Image (cartoon, rainbow, N blue to C red; front, side, top):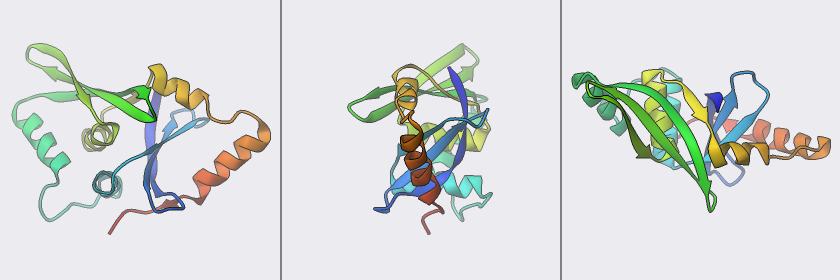
Length: 153
């Protein structure tokens, strides 16, 4: 299991939103293409901006707080047919409960609760499958650098 952090929200060359995860050691990245609303939600939180009304992820955090439930961690744990999967681990009065989630929602919640983010399983295999040869690594780095780190306004 590799600990990650959200490096930023970007848009690829076709204006599709991407959340970029980077390992804590700063040597590996994992891009995950997400929806526009989730990209906006994550970007707003990373930038410290507060929406005039709570977004869905703010609402979820507020409900969890009211119920005295805390987010222990988020794990991007699988990849099937080019789709990533995630689990949110919640600390409840009855112990740890795991909830299946889309990665974008799990990451938006992790950003709001400062919960640690991990990658494991087939999702980690996907990160390991990123180009390894020097020329391919440079192409991948250029792709990541070319992504505009901006949010949808």
